[in-house]
Image 1 (cartoon, rainbow, N blue to C red):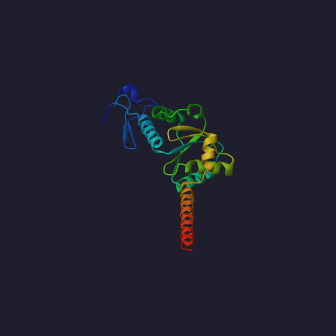
Image 2 (cartoon, rainbow, N blue to C red):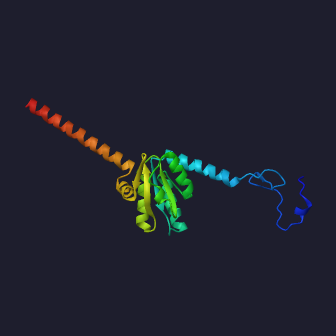
Length: 196
């Protein structure tokens, strides 16, 4: 049992040691106090760095004016497309971006920001946020980051208007099939012409 000086025991706001989430917090008489807040910020900072480095496209979103129901719908749309939608502290994102060499974000890291991380499909994050913003007229794209390059809001919106990865693959297959089919027709016509 920890012993406290007599003059401290009777004070109104004296707090004894307590345990929260498995961590023992002690006052100045009971030992060293661990800063859980600092450890949580470091873990969050590392998470942000990891997401920024792994994502093929990151879209910074101004979500002011969006209510809980609308954000829930946006998160569901993001999950369905394999996109992560997160809200982080601007200061932590600024530090992580600076360490990773992402430039151009400093002036946009003010106010209410959320981040959409697209991993497999580079277009998905921009497309979902753009469509949601068009529907609700509340959520806007501030800027983005793709393949080591800063992207303005206009560039992200242009990217959002492109077809998705699956649609591009289908278009490529149809194009290739059409070319192969036309080649087969041309070769068949040459063969018939030579036989005649």
